[in-house]
Amino acid sequence: MKIFGIGMNYAAHNKELQNPLLYKRDASAQGSACKSSLQSQPVVFTKADSALLTEGKPFFIPAYTQRCDYETELCVRINHLGRSIPERFAHRYYDEVTVGIDFTARDLQEQLRQEGLPWDLCKGFDGSAAIGKWMPLAHYGKGIQELHFHLLQNGKQVQTGCTADMLFGVDRLVSFISQFFTLKTGDIIFTGTPAGIGPVSIDDHLEGYLEGEKVLEFNVK
Image (cartoon, rainbow, N blue to C red):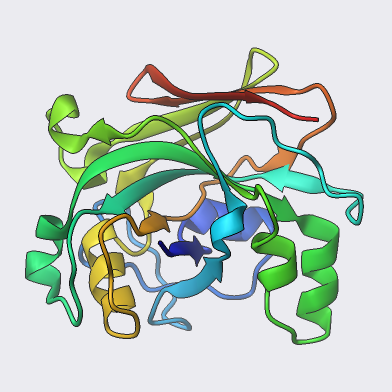
């Protein structure tokens, strides 16, 4: 089982991080246009299988970070084997979705960026890929690029997003990743986070919602 993350897939999130990489909007996404074309393909990173956090188990903040941020995302699960998948057929390779949190050791990420190093240590550590209950996409009666999701932190809504605002749509992501990695049943794609990221603290209670239904809930330790 492989876990893929997508970086900087929402324009507003890029702005809040003051990221210089701006994107030309991909045709498979539905939202308003993004005018820059400095970056023409998705930013992909991977997480170790030990990063997976399921079944409401608590998340433990690593001792080596002074700021660990939540990044709420729509996640999709691959349902059968595929490689070099044409974008027009990508929708056949997933049928379940959920909300996940891509935890990021933000201070370590900044250090790695400054040194020109990969993101593995700040993104792929144990427990950093929390996922909720998998739901059939058909349950929502909507297309993959029409889904709304949000996160509550201690009962307060802190982050909200809609897949229509993705710079690169889900089908584009599946197709792109499959050019480099054989996708297998059970592989998971974290599709990127919208604006509104923030730090977690010990004893926080996090709840993730997809189209108004709670699919994710756990505590921070």
